[in-house]
Image (cartoon, rainbow, N blue to C red; front, side):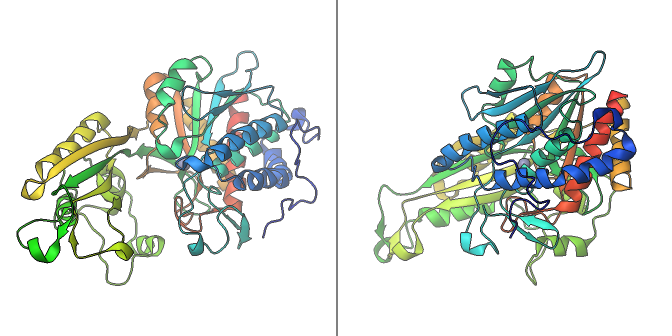
Length: 471
Ligand SMILES: [Zn+2]
């Protein structure tokens, strides 16, 4: 169990700015940054542990207070690292935390993004240690949010801390609180605070590295749409013996409908969705087997290379079903049932068109003339991210310095819709999608974790990057 202060008494548990002198800014240079990051590590880990202990689950109403508490706490943490301007930005949704270090004359401004909200923990009994009580095992911190994305916040805090309140470039922090529910108020936030959120470079610390110790820059992200489909066949439940055989029950009908989302080989069968070729990267099947823990005898699905299937083709999954519980079952034909369906979108896909394609598929494939109603949900765009120009080159250099190897330019099957938003709204800016997590991090899963040595390296890379840009 981590007890807050690995370095001994470094955790600032009250709010307020830190008064410790870390490294005088005049001696911060590239060779010293590795040392400076090590030095601020105890405080950074303490910050992360405090943040993890707040169950800021954005999708569950009863955690609304925790979400607000986490926003407040992130504000305090930014103040602690010397941020001169910290406030909450809000546009009808959950607050985002904004911090600003004005740019020294003639220097660019870098916006550092992460999110403080987390996914629900799932079955508490399945966790090796409690989800919101951080626990250290084998150099990793285990807890919900340790990786996604409170680890990303910790990277930003550590990188800023070494500059002792005076980063060599302008820095804006934008730590949002509704990423895990698809950032519903993000377009309104970006409209309302267009000036605050303008920068030369956007660093989105919310992706996945290629492997532990091997950094990545993400070049493509999938988008996402989801919907709840309601199927009904009867006004009310009927005796399954009396009418079974002539009357379809809604759950069987729903299952048949859901089964049409894939062909027999497991490819998505929704017509009209974009797909593209994957990059020339081999993802070994043994690695996939190990990372996924697919049960013995279960086959992987879909056609094409592994990275194509994970990064540049659509994927459909059924997230949940509402129906009669087994404990409440009786010999009754169920009159209605609902399912939540999620579709990941390939780069180049228009999310509105995908939402319509999903809706049409569900309406057109209703078995036996059943009543079908589709309620659209989350909608986020995919991205293709060009890594050209001096800022991208600086980032490659910074990662190479910190990790001792060049970053792997890879795709990501997940969705970070804000990347598309920043890229569209600021076409001249460079967007860099970085990571602190690795394929073993189990983001959104049971026993989520972050590797502490990668946390250090990611923070080191970010500090070197800021330093490079200030030269
Ligand atoms: Zn995330």
